[in-house]
Length: 282
Image (cartoon, rainbow, N blue to C red; front, side, top):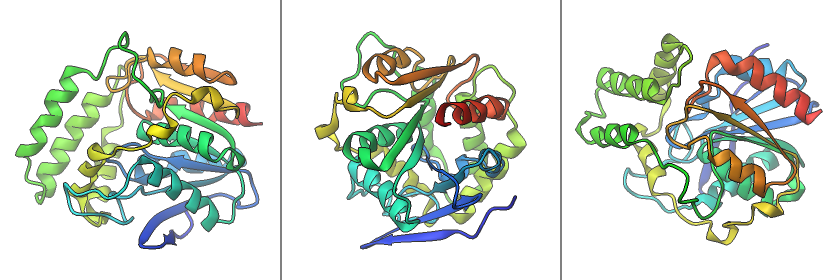
């Protein structure tokens, strides 16, 4: 099975770059990536394996990453609800009325907003490595200090030097990993491709400026579509304890616990994740 040609979805002055896998007559799964990463984070082999389970798989670049509309670094004129609108516009561009929505990290927050705001467009949601869209629980540990300290080093990177960027981003991949082996050759290939295809690679950091969406805060109990929660026990961004809040607030939900997995889509988990999604949505 091969990746089909990319499809650009235009809406006003925003262009979203997408790719699809599988038979368009099959049930659709829309994959929403996390902050700072492009659609390539959803590895093509992962997407093809998901398509082989009988799905039409769509991955896309959020604004400010990959080939989608980007803005100057440090400048942002959209909020998280706009990113949710972009996802719906992608479905419209493919003429898909309802889809299964899978989001990782920031993508998981976007998926929650979609499920509240546009429930008629959603068959199910899968929330991976994320937390609740609402007031943080003060009892849950925050982001690991190692991550915060590492992110601060970004100011010292020459973002025009490909080798320096790859070295830095590979360190980030190691930091995000849990206790499972990581295919760093695959990671390096992805980072290189992300750098080379990006409209403006450094604009990815605009994702740290995203705000908005307060109208949908603490409304998870309104989500009434089947929800699969997937989370690694060694996640340094969103602590595993966030799953308890998600499971409590979203009544029609199930939890897939990935023992030893960090904040990552680890290839060692692909079979488990894909089989779980297939069993959950069928």
